[in-house]
Length: 352
Image (cartoon, rainbow, N blue to C red; front, side, top):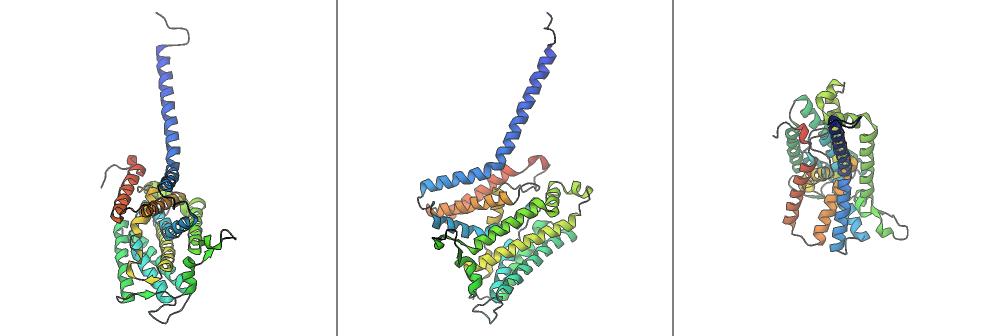
């Protein structure tokens, strides 16, 4: 029996196959689009859930508290995100925060010595953090030491230097201007100046804008993604890999130093443990926001959303009276799930 003119069984099969392929491509396209917005949708859903369970959540005072808590983590996470996008990892955060935080307190007005260098102490702390970030990159690129090992060593160097500078003591910051970063507020509502955001929060917002501009509009940002997406291909394209790795690690140090200044202003005290917990929290914020640990994906906006998710979750668990040990367990589960969702398994031949 002959087929109708212009239609053959083979033609029907090809048409069905093409339609199936088209449907699959459409699903993949919308799946990727939805995945891009998933962290933001998760943040909104989390806020709604906590708000339903705790009436105190949706208050201006609580939102200001969340912003104040997120400020140093957000700044530090910007640099952490850059290194992860590069395809590397930075484990030196707590060490750099420790020595930079101790430096700013000991050089500003304090009860430990007679120094009173004001804002110059802030500059010195940030420059020290940049130098440590540069050393991270130098050891990694020139000595061919894996980034996790080079930066882990730098963490202990920073903690050791902070302990040495304090000689086992503590120092209280008494500089009113630096402390004013967290104690003084810029009024968002002129009729209610008490509801304004602390200057440290505005400083964190500026750090986010700087990171976004670097990522989006500079050669550093473009090459950062290129190296993270495939270092060999980037090298073949003429990208000077070691130079841009040094720049990225130095930038990570800069953001870390700025975060240390904010943290020191918040605590008002110099101690080696001033950065305790910041490494895990910053990496969690980066990964929860959708930045892949395999490199080449993510960015500043993803990190902003991720840090807000972590901070809002922590704030919500406190409002709901969740046990601190359970809070840590929940954070651990979240980072494992986030890595599982963001990792590009197609690029990994083996899991080490």
